[in-house]
Amino acid sequence: MSQQRTGPTDGPDFPDLPEATVARLPEYLRALHHLAEEGHDTVSSEGLAAAAGVNSAKLRKDLSHLGRTGTRGVGYDVTLLIDQIEQVLGLTHRRAVALVGVGNLGHALAGYAGFGSRGFRIAALFDADLGRVGEQINGLVVRHIDDLPAVVVEESISIAVIATPALAAQHVCDRLVAAGVTSVLNFAPCVLSVPEGVDVRKVDLAIELQILSFHEHRKSALTALPAVQKAKRGEAEVAS
Amino acid sequence: MSQQRTGPTDGPDFPDLPEATVARLPEYLRALHHLAEEGHDTVSSEGLAAAAGVNSAKLRKDLSHLGRTGTRGVGYDVTLLIDQIEQVLGLTHRRAVALVGVGNLGHALAGYAGFGSRGFRIAALFDADLGRVGEQINGLVVRHIDDLPAVVVEESISIAVIATPALAAQHVCDRLVAAGVTSVLNFAPCVLSVPEGVDVRKVDLAIELQILSFHEHRKSALTALPAVQKAKRGEAEVAS
DNA sequence: TAATGTGAACGATTTCACAGCT
DNA sequence: AGCTGTGAAATCGTTCACATTA
Image 1 (cartoon, each protein chain N blue to C red):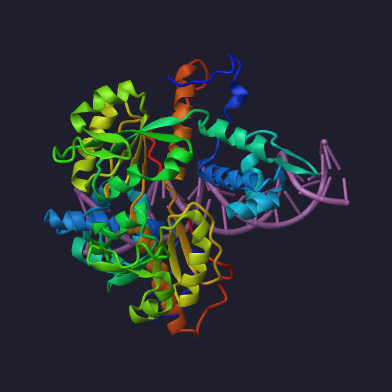
Image 2 (image 1 turned 180 degrees about the horizontal axis):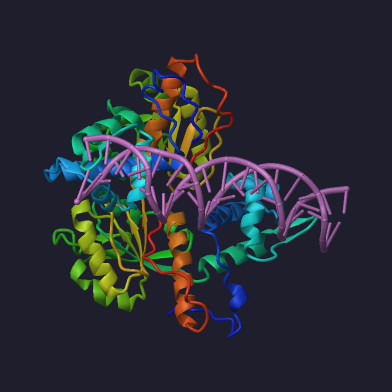
């Protein structure tokens, strides 16, 4: 819809994807890798949608933004689609990631195998605590945060993970941005302000539980008073 | 279990909030606690919106769903609003949470202080690996997953966190649901299927990075070809 | 006067239903 | 015949702008 096509010479490599679609492509990618391991060569929109936990119309609309990806009457070629999604997500090379804060959570993230297998390489660990600097985790030495600028350049790092306490996060973020980082994944429970052109995503573990708490609260309120209005909701509620 | 009834006429207690609003209330709550610690008694929609990283119209609309919460010409009473949000989110009592899978990530989650300070109590740890059963983490003994049914009842657990490998997650989830758990926070990179009435939220760390990777990719494509169409985006891009 | 609460406009996303390929 | 790709409809969410109220 909102697309002015810039000519017959294609919007080559770069469709302007809706944000909601971007957020789902990684899920499709994971499902596709799984299907590939199981030996599937092709998959229908129904099949892939089921594996990714969405409905098939949504999946088809999402994939349609990537250009022609399937074959009518047949479905999608699994390996081809993997390639196309990895292309669009910029996963054709393994991206170097810096992790700041090797406390409780940071330590676990540093050892999380899922990053390595899905396109990323933890290239450096940082902490402000001199007691932690020098420690070795998973084959990487923890460096002092003052080394940030040098290492970011050295390792061509553009993505960083913040796993510090909330009070330190904004300061750390400022230093990351100053060093050239342009994407931040923030685990600290606070709002980060960043200049234009820098992307921030946030993961707040307690917030996830609080959202579930709301639903628990609602469910127990409904079962406690089964009298009025239950005609409303009918399907399995899966929020993501 | 766990209901706090205000009487038979408690209809007004339970607004039917939009899901997007529910997802933001915890962020407001966090910001409010922070403001309270700084000694603020009241806060305007502008002020709270800034602290929570949203715009003020959205905040007012969100809060309007809770009923009259502010005072025109003045703003919102900080402690009163905290109470109202905690009420709606069902945080008036501390909820017991089970955590399954005390590997790398699960271990860190078991020690995460943010759960304790924001309405939750990790009440039990489980693992399938007998080598881990008996280990003590943060004052809790890891139990074998066969003990699930007993412990869930004993501790009145309705929320569980899954931090197992992907291959085990569905099986663990089935056992949790069978034991009576009705909300699941899933850290395993896979889709869980659950019966109606059970809520699932998912946190996939690699997916978060992949979404950032997309934006990195797009940014570098845009700076590489500064020629065409840049009139589009204007503000700081904060995706959550 | 200052700031909330809210109808109405707008925009984004999801879903439907089917035309069009293979 | 079967399944993708896609307009159009429906739904959901955001923003605007201002009437309303303390």
